[in-house]
Amino acid sequence: MNKELIQLIDISKSFDGQMVLDELNLSIHENEFVTLLGPSGCGKTTTLRILGGFAGPDNGRVVFDGQDITHVPPNKRQLNTVFQKYALFTHMTIAENIAFGLKIKKKPKSYIDDKIRYALKLVNLDGYENRMPDSLSGGQQQRVAIARAIVNEPKVLLLDEPLGALDLKLRQEMQYELIRMKNELGITFVYVTHDQEEALTMSDTIVVMNQGYIQQIGSPESIYNEPENAFVADFIGDSNIIPATMIEDRLVSILGTRFACVDTGFGHNRPVDVVIRPEDVILVDPSEGIIQGVVTHLIFKGVHYEMEVQACGFEWLVQSTTLFPVGKEVGIQVDPFNIQIMNKPESEDEEAVTLDI
Image 1 (cartoon, rainbow, N blue to C red):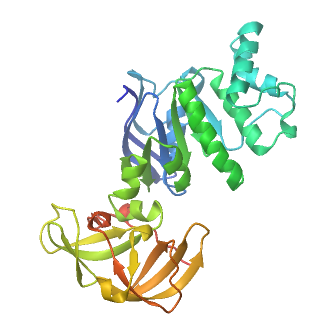
Image 2 (tube, rainbow, N blue to C red; image 1 turned 30 degrees about the vertical axis):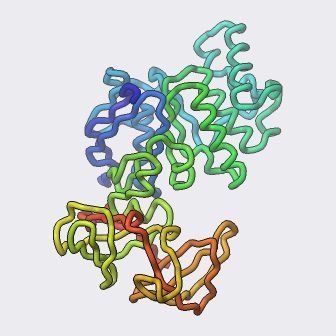
Image 3 (cartoon, rainbow, N blue to C red; image 1 turned 60 degrees about the vertical axis):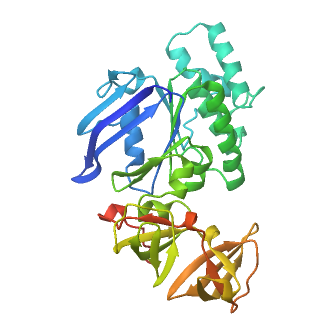
């Protein structure tokens, strides 16, 4: 693993008596793509603002490359920020926008011209030097904002929901562009989003946040396949979260039926929550299922069918490439490796989000 570049140590922050961050601790490594992921109000943007120097913590320290930068102003930090709103100067050409920070630093013209050419090539906007911002699409404007940030050669690029204003197709294209840019530049990206797909697609490390606390840190694969609590399981992708009882190691009772699993260390006859992803629920003939149910709803999603199956008093969400029509009786099977056991939530921030509709 690369060396530790950033440490947030015991960071706390409140606004008008409302605690937004509560003794948050986070380490970020060199050349890492880290995503702060969570719902609105979880503290992710405040964390980014503290890291960038746009807000100060009430308590705690920000350490960058071994130096305490808690009270260092934004323009003195080796970080640049890209915002959702682009913040381009509409009266300046693209080249003038990109050169703005370099001119303030009184860099020579030849240096600035070289940097503009390099940055535009990196963001696939060769030949756009003399265009005006209002002649560009949203995605192109966002690329200019990124180009303006990277010409200053920051060690870290902070991105605050930069793709939020783009349409779905353009957003997906820009996700791959950002991955390519990060790999070419060899710098650290810290990215803020509430979009789970963005986080899973781009990140080396995902930091899941809720109510000012970090819920889980891990790779996209571990976050998705091994959520540590109900909030993470519910927020990252679709889930069946079912109250259960851990009978003993590798054996769990779900809705009154015993299922083999692979988890250990949860004790005997202990209440737990079980997470089973919809794509891991296998529908079979009723005679072959561990439990039996009836298909109650069906939606075609393009790449798969999404179904709801009423079984043992629980509405199972199922995703399958095989169609089972509404009203059909089915059996349910689940591979033991696809049954994830979790401890019951110990606090409100660990609970799955419930929506009042």
